[in-house]
Every structure is written in C-alpha cells, then in structure tokens.
Image (cartoon, rainbow, N blue to C red):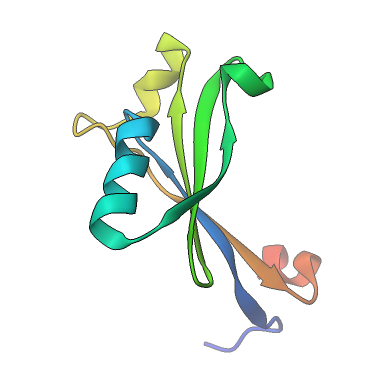
Length: 97
C-alpha cells in the first residue's frame, strides 16, 4: 500500500503507566535511560506526572494521571495504550492517509 507522505522519524513514544516515578526508575536501572525532563505538581501540572527519558535518539515519555477518574484509561495491568509522535514533511497529508 503506497502513501503520499514520508515519515522522517519518531520524536517520542508516550506510555501511560500507573506509577511514572517507579517506571522511570526501572527504565534508568534496567535499560540505561536517563531522565532529561519532568512535569508534575512542582512545575504546575495538576492532572498528571510525566518523566521524559532518553537513550541516544530514543525518547520515552512516561505519564501517570493524578486525577482518579483519569486512571480509568489504564488497563488492569496498570498500563495504557501508547501514543507515538512522528516527524513528517507534511502533517496534513499524513492525517488524510
């Protein structure tokens, strides 16, 4: 199947997890990622906590909701569906495909 767009790369993958702090610790110790950014209550985010981890050109964003109703999006295993952001020359063509 041919498409009219070209994906140039992946910016990051966001994973929704039950405990972002614990998941960030695991990815640091087990896989060698390092924390490069944080967003949470201390930075003004009232509804979620996110850690950005990087290893070479791989970026992961681990996000946990702080609002109890938002936790319903998490699966019984404590994880939610991932979100991937890609780089492309023409975003309009990408979304129409």
